Length: 202
Figure 1 (cartoon, rainbow, N blue to C red):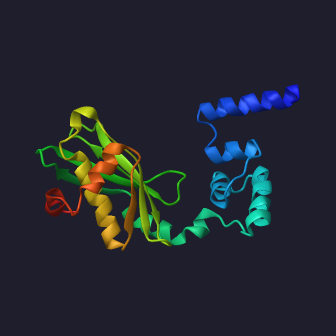
Figure 2: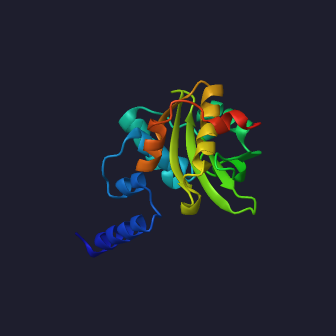
Figure 3: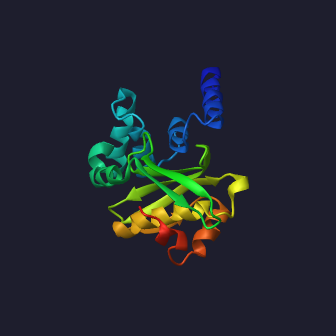
């Protein structure tokens, strides 16, 4: 391996470790096999970037897929997300904690919303992001968090209730309940809307 190529390899590995490259970009730089979904994810980062034209060509040559920009490809999802974007409401958890909730679109992610929970002083105490796929009628929950001192107090139940509300209103199925074991266990034991859901005036 040449010194130049070795240096580029090291730089790419460092960027990857720093989180500056996603997995698909790393594979492309290392000339590893990538799926059509991974190629599309990379192009979506900056569709107008001429540097990504070769990825569009790869998408067409390898998979027979013409690249379509997210604003066109996800037209139905965009419409649905606009419906819920910037929704705000107040609620009380099962432990009697007053909270404020904001639902908003995730920047640079065309099919995703996030819910953030704030206490009465305005401090963020929890939240979760989730992606919407209308074509396949699915919702996938991504990262979620609740501050340690606010756990087991109904904060995440409010988040779950609202995601279930969106799923029910749009005939979508929640197919992924999050990344942590705690989140998966929570959803596995959740058979219906909680009492907090019924009490909230959305």
